[in-house]
Image (cartoon, rainbow, N blue to C red; front, side):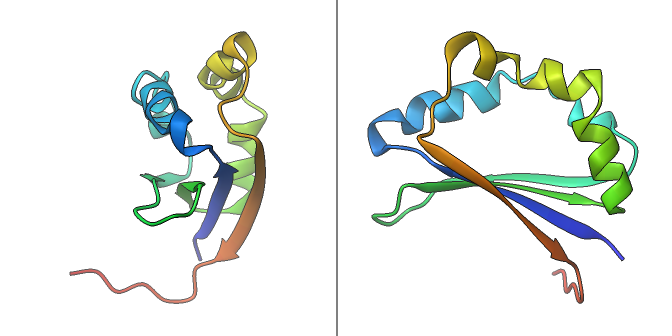
Amino acid sequence: MSIVKVNAITVPRERFAEFERRFASRAGRVEQAEGFESFELLRPNDERELCLVVTRWRSEEDFRAWVASPDFAAGHSQHRAEGPVGTASEIWSFDVLETIAA
């Protein structure tokens, strides 16, 4: 059974462009991580200021290995060098119970 990790990041609307730019220029190493299945970057199209980074993994162990990896650290170097774009964030975790695709 796959798992989904959602990083829910509060981003002020005036910083949306910077948030998108940073993801567009990210290292892109997650795609090669063991157990990685998918990635989505979601920006609200309503009044909310909560952007979502959604990743899907084969297992919790694969996700934890990614977070502990040097590639994860490299992928988050902009955050360390330039400071955060968001004002808050939290990780949500879900088990995938059912999937239907077009």
